[in-house]
Length: 493
Image: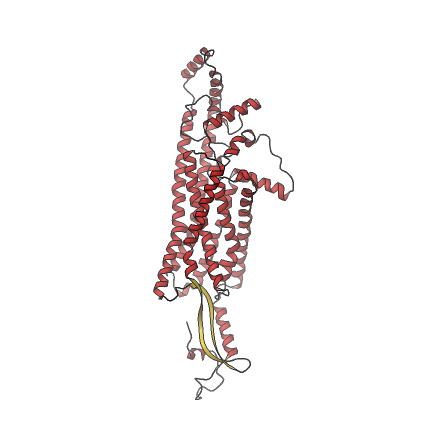
């Protein structure tokens, strides 16, 4: 791109006649060259003024919304010990990644791309690429790990202590950060500041009349493999592009799709088993069962609980089946939304980056159009840092309760009145033991249900009907989940 001396003669006069003997060695006018360089820089500016205002405004809105959403998620987990479960630690890690990205996307991703020149230092060049890159990798890997954890935690029905769960989740989060830094390490090694010269070592006369040698060009932050051929640099760029396509789109989308589909099938199978086990016996069987229970009343004390539980099951069968179907459909919709949002938001950025890196859209006539499409795709992908808190936090029942409490405590400066009929109040032992789960062992459900009935002398609380009916039908449990209306989403979202 370096201009020859004869090309510069077309724009700036040397101040002497072209036929003079010393014309080729005469210096250029410094003011003329400076003005020509500024005009060239303005013509290479990527965006117009109204486009800069538009993109900056949208980026500010995205950043502010992401800071508020992810900040609330982090505050909800940190402020209350009961919220520090294994799944919430992963949600906290995702919110932390998105929060850092929301703070850094304007100064590191948007502002340096406005001008053709990179006005910052070499350290900023590396830091501005590594920090957003590692946070993007961390966010996508965390979403993948959450999908895997969500499936196996629901399927295995395994319960451990909260402290052990949190410790494992913290170790997984640290491993995710280390893996993210390793994936973004090429950005740290190969991105450098370099000069893109237009006029190099040109003799000019400055304002004071002295003859000096100057070079004109722009500092740029780009991939440079020092001391290596351009072919090696291009290969490094292609490898980095393939890593981004694989770990930012293909792998997370594959994991989300596979494990969400497996979880959806598991829940549907589970719901069908629950419907079959809840089905009432035939009429003659019910009569025989009732006759036998009355006949053996003096010899079997446990039969006192059998008939009420059976009648309750028959009376609420239709209602429970509808509730289970609605719950399963809602959970399926949420799982599809998680995978669908990720695929829709990251596909444009992945596609345009792949096409640019492999020089499939290198037509000089459409450079400006490609630049605007690229920036728009980046902005669309940044919307994920606003949507992730909603999908993984605001759709979680416990998080919603915490957000409501934060609003009343810090915004309205008053204490929120807790309803006495709330589920966690009646079965606090389950809520305290596994607030992020929808399952528990049979003994805990049985004991808690009996304690609640004996203490209150009332019917079972909402969402706990399945657990209480287990008391007499020990064959009804099998290998299934006991779902709860109040905390059902916590295992899925």
